[in-house]
Length: 108
Image (cartoon, rainbow, N blue to C red; front, side, top):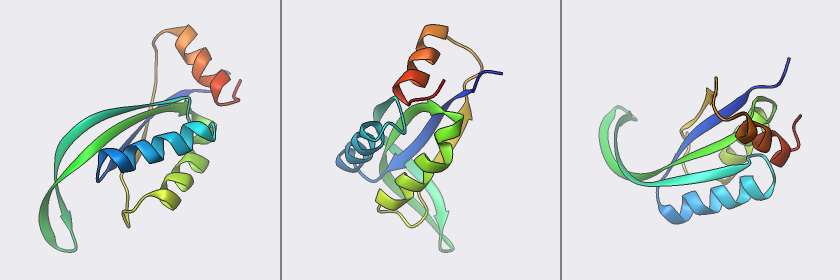
């Protein structure tokens, strides 16, 4: 069975942080590409307090086997104590694009 591709959703406190994270994980071939989507407003509970902050959303494309290493690398580099890193299966799409993700991350 062919390995499954994943989209990984990550938030960061700024565009500069998102760009640094993207360049690190794509440069290390843990992800084939990153899309930095831009400014968002996040509303969330942290330390018993309701917070509202500006953040930047990012989507990475990778293969399932890279999720543990990708998650750990983002955790190492990310300034948050508990960064949002969520992997979502890609169930379909352009087969050539999925093949490209696999090739660029060294997966087959």
